Length: 366
Image (cartoon, rainbow, N blue to C red):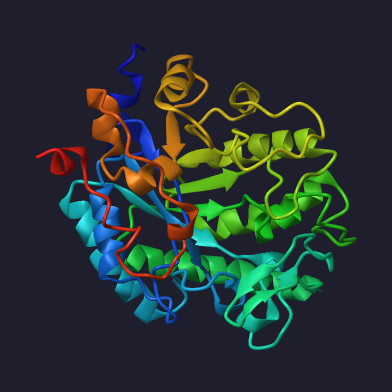
């Protein structure tokens, strides 16, 4: 491929993506205390619908899954209905949008859980400064380890959330297995000290994700389901000595499901655990033969290189999309990018400010 590699169309199952650029899932905390998607969410995603694929912000699968203020949910019919105008707004711009299914696991706090402890595979506290809660900054708590008999209930929550995402009109779903949230906690030896069938070995630590994938693909065709992983990540106090063996095994096992894609945070922009050499897309490509998305810290040049070399089929961009809703057009026309959005605006529940008020290049230079 040439320098135009990112702008070639791509067949994702039976969907045709107009380019190889993905809007990465980013929590923006604009859905209110009721966790209902709303009109400014619709505007935000529609503004960025020139991306070949949009992956929504993490959307919680149950009340127990909550762990971030004003993030959206998908665990009631009302929540599913609230997403419909968002999906319609993207489709009206000929965009394609997947919903990301999220469970925060131990990265939550009892103030999100009606006073109950957050759940995790094992009772191991996240080693971090504090968690932002409805009652302000709080220290992390030792989570409650899920009982073996409870795990089928959590898997069922993923299935129900997938059903509601389908009813809302999404084009597919992404299972969030990255960044130190519940699925990642099951995958990694640092956070999974279980002695039942869900822990104790590389194979057993994959069992929870395996059951979630099978539950979600009982609702959606596999070519409408993606999975996100972060083998190099340190975010939320992650990083395990056997990361390379674990994530190689996971990618190899996921290959058999013929998923829409595997979304790998191979970049080190969220930090690196320094437990060996970073895993690369080429390593994943050797064992996973389906569509592969690279993510984290890419520029137009490095994204073009990765796609041209065949290491990735698609590249996801996060932060550049915040202040550049027309990122695709800017890349394609060689236009300068807007100044990065200040971190104070990323999650601030201030309505449109810092969210939908970034103009396109053409609007700013009319």
